[in-house]
Length: 541
View 1: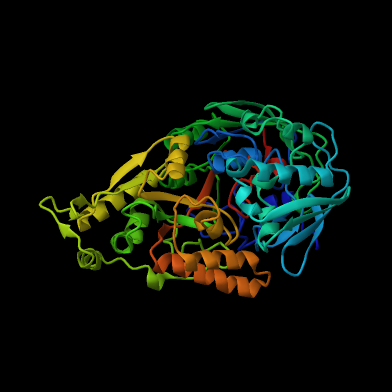
View 2 (view 1 turned 90 degrees about the horizontal axis):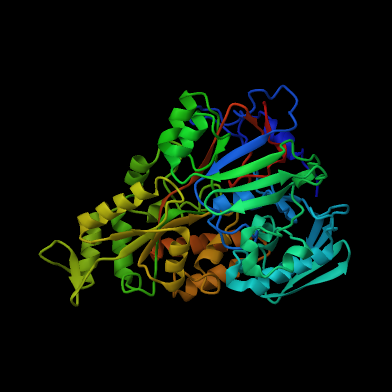
């Protein structure tokens, strides 16, 4: 496996058409990194970067369950992964593993590990570290966001100090890509000695990454300190961070984050509100962007609820929702209307726009054929029960509120009375776990089609309680298929099944936008469109 240019060079490169490239929202150029206004100069060492995020991380245990992107932005700086996924083409390249092989039925994966890597506590990284980390994730089970990648795990064998074999009882073709995620980042033995739940505070969390956790203060900040001995970045990059520290500051309101950037109180902001993109562009603040792979924003049903278990109701809701209207109202240029449950930047995505139809009149006829009748209040009812589902959502993306309000209006126009519920991330997660919802609005980023299994399989998180044996068969089949072309076909069938059986209502893709001070350079987004490691980031002053 050949090494490409170092990540730092990638961050400063100007090349038309580069998928990772940061571009101004108002520019047609896809290749110029706007953070490189001083790119002709050598990077400056030193400085403290303040990065504003919208949500408290909740847990800074790399494999724990946190608040999504804002958690992973932090943990990506602390842990390294066995493999790096190239944002340009989705290919897998060396990181902590210099090479890897897969057996014929994709049940065994042997990784050759890099020599000379150390954890921030000075202990060496070796095959035992990989085994211990993976065993710990499996033991944590539902407490770990990484657990769905280990279905059928039978164990990890230490062949020698620099060789390890990970084995499964059934094929797990996407596993190499899964190891590129921060959630599967390798942690030190001292971390694993701490009870799993206690690691959420970050105290004692030790990785091989370029930064260490100085402290985490809930709902306030997470402060990271740079390592000066880091020399094993992804894809051959070898330099230690230029920055002295990074502070991830929690600022929940998107508009306040934008104001903090423009008033020079912070250096970078995440979760830029779409309506603020033009403001930043016109004011000369660089914007780094990349369309997110994985599951698009949309509505998914709880199929154990009376609403979600009725195929006719699911179909009617699918017909009543107008994705184009939602995109055009809630968002700006740079966000695409969904054409599949998977985003256009996801490997193996297929265009299902022919099956994604908005037709309110047909929605009404589908309900009436199913025995629903409108009451005096204009809302459908059946067997004495009004068609009044609860849709749950959270504010991890600023336009979400506008999007769900539009869905509420569109469904009300048909005769479906939606109640909207929103709360904190832990409250939202509890709703999913207990099934106390009918509809849910959300998305999930991952640069592999296996994200469909981890989200919708009955053997994974199973939040949606989908009872569709054919879909389950497809999700498991793609997991077992080692031939890329055959796996692509299976994933295409799974996407079609999700849409035509109305298990999901795809609405719009997500594009990640980061706003930068003009003093900030070298901030990049990874293949999952989340913040990459900040080893190449630097400040002019």
